[in-house]
Image 1 (cartoon, rainbow, N blue to C red):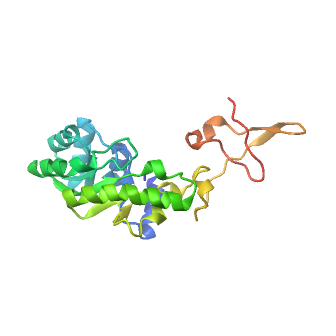
Image 2 (image 1 turned 135 degrees about the horizontal axis):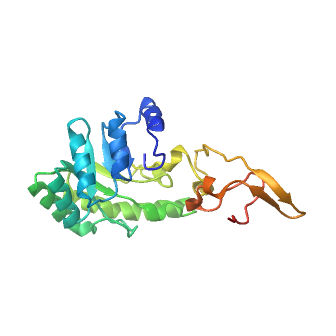
Length: 244
């Protein structure tokens, strides 16, 4: 869900046997629940916003809401809002969110003292998604997941959540119980470099407005392109740059 942000596509995934969804924002969590897709939702980013946490807490009578926490502050905010289920977010090398592995158990103990159910741990190895050589990517994933496994032993619970589109197939022996991959469903030009068994779902139609002997200029619409993952691609040619 964090990739598609579309409940219609999520429903297709459910029809195909999909069970749980990872969301990036409280708004996505709320939208999924209202669409009847709240059987198991994870907010994988921490939040301190009382109103948003409260809105998610109200959904718990009909939906399974789980929130990632990584600090005393995020725990306190979740507890005050009445959140019932959390995962301990562990820093496995991405250096974004996540508690240090050796501190994860203490945070889990504190959460249980607040009456919160700790379902397990999550550790997103996003820094490894684009390691180009697969054997090297596999080795680095194994190192990151050793950190997560150590934290999981201290935390307890039944869930060890990790992975992404670039590493989904490297977790057969890591002990991970669920994969957080999302980009596979639509794909992008960045992940296409890894020769994954997924195809790009959408293309933008443009018009060539100028051409010379060595290059052409196309009117595609810069805002129609997902520039957060690099330049767009074109079959049998290369994109030099995008200009506004």
